[in-house]
Image (cartoon, rainbow, N blue to C red):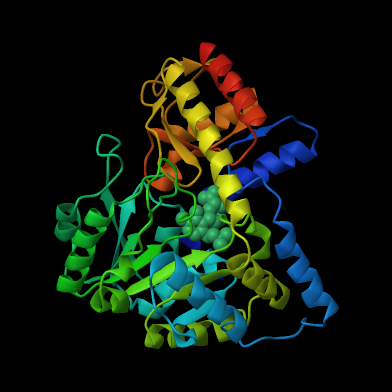
Length: 395
Ligand code: PMP
Ligand code: GLU
């Protein structure tokens, strides 16, 4: 019997696939260096864990309201006020099982069949598939390394049609690490308001920023753009809480209600204990975040310098997140370890097999001349991984 055409058109997440492969190799006793999935290597801060333990001991282990506890929604509102100058009330907030789930809810809430969603490339692997799951049509706008992987407002304007429903904005970006300035975001906001399109603003890397750059939420400029924006955020990256699975959105109350309804049938509430832990993360001391950012900054500098010193490879310096897009144009078409590298998949596969280094091919991010390395791993691993890449290319 035929299975769902829509579901069968969805490709697996390449970030998670590489991560699973690398973890399996490690479990089999192979010494793999993982530059794959974007997952901080730090432990979750102690005060957050203690809040979770307390929640268990106090019996906070039952269903909560499907779209999250009021307590956590208030904490999220305080976070938006403090970090982004945004005023929301709990009716604007939906708590979900990770920011990935928040994004799925957002596309489900706004898309009708055939609606177009503009996604700048390189993009995080899941955006186009999430749009397709919501019966929408991803419209890709390509950016180049020469332009710092940033789109121009002109490019977005040209991509807008009478079917355009939304634009996906991801600053700081996964996979490129680029950040849009306030001036650039203001132009995007003006365009979105003029054309009446939604902005899905994925701000999950907002705290992972280097070189004195500043994160600004596009929703904060005026009430019109605030009404059109679904801000997506979560605790996975900033607080090293990837496994806890808490993400959240802020949107107008109508969209929040729809997302809450969808979620109430799909998953019910996110984990009650993790919700308590998230209140502690958002309200508690932020010094651990600063410590992590300082450490990521050092790793980034080292990785960028090493890559640019390896013949045939290059990269630009990212200003945020914890990824480097390594340009492999000069390697493509050459023979390494006895085989011709035809694109980013070949490069990533061969590197994993022959040098035991895991990284993510650019193909899943919409660029076949790059591969993505995550520097959310120790300097020791980064040094060893880059030594291996250097040796691999010498062959
Ligand atoms: N958005 C981006 C850009 C990401 O890189 C991730 C990473 N997983 C997510 C959303 C989802 O985060 P999570 O579901 O772990 O909260
Ligand atoms: N977002 C991270 C990444 O891009 C984690 C894996 C995932 O959820 O895709 O590697």
